Length: 292
Image (tube, rainbow, N blue to C red):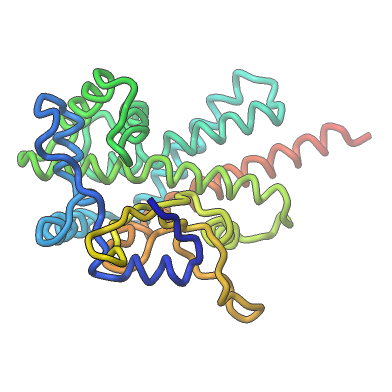
């Protein structure tokens, strides 16, 4: 296995049609719901199979309303913060813990609701279980992972089994990446001026501290065959300059780039905006309470 870190070379390989992804093992563990799920998603497929699944993902995403996603994210975040803080003394540690919970829960719940899943607010823990094993297919808790996949597929609601799989794929791939984006943007906000726009914070995280640090590709080996390469999405960009910021590869690049960057940013921005506004109100209230 080789590791490639320079962003220009990573971008070139991501855009190279000869670069392929390691495919899910279709022959292994036929009794495993999780193994069948990985074999049915676009992430671990190549060629015409990938093209067809990717096209269907884009159809599903095309029908999602960005304003509704943002509204759902704001409402869920505000409700979670209010409910959680009502039971605490509103110390900073509790506020940060609640913000982290929102980051892990809200993106999945909002996307699940928009895609028509049953009981969307009950799904984030199931998605987290699947997402932990999703990149490599390796899990220390196979029975729990299989059970989570089964419950998610049942909640997906689509009549077609392949369609259910792709709907669940969208939730799984949104889980950790969007949560990490939200958490890091909130951490960055604490070091920046209060007036710094949320989108500026999100862009800085995507550029300088990618929520998804690596991806894998099979690339042509010098003497034939393929090598497994780990491509770093957060490596150095030697072409960056004062008038040319480092390229952003957090959503990938080329034909296999993330199918939903706009949706992820809309949801993340709504969560971060809501939490920042809540924190500002809390600080203002505290200042007034402490005033002589």
